[in-house]
Image 1 (spheres, helix red, strand yellow):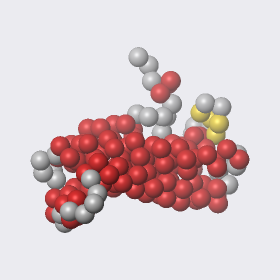
Image 2: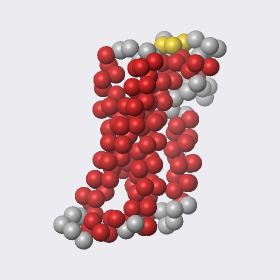
Image 3: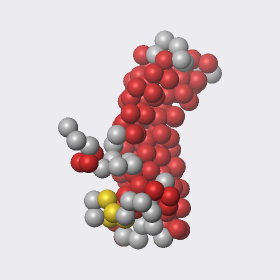
Amino acid sequence: MGLGIGHFVSHVGGMPYLNFVSLGLIVATGMNASNAESTTNAYIQMHLDKTYYEMSTGPISLEEIIVGQALWAGVRSTICGTLFLLVTLFMGILQSWLVIFIPIILFITGTLFGFLGLTFTLLAPTRDYLNYFSMLIIQPMYMFSNTFFPLSSVSP
């Protein structure tokens, strides 16, 4: 994106377009990883594999299972986003020392999206309903959240 369109769009918000897109895609990668973990994977563990039922037969409550799943979504978000971050660092796109805070932001964002996805997954009657969440909530958020273009350029 940044290498192709970046030749036509030089700067966005005072930074090169490649940097602008890279930062947005790092967090979007974390969001999508957290969403996949807290919707599809959690649904399979809940309903098909019965993993949650088996865990609840031990000395663990449903609240602890949900919090653990959301925290794991945050960890997965951190792993996937940090891998993308390492690629951008290797390419020399991001050079500020402030990038050391990005994994913390990825973990917080991933955990919050994990709770959001788990809430919808717990309410979904079938696996098909998870597509509604992804297409009606996650994808519009991905497209209209300063990832590819600044929202300030959109006229009211």
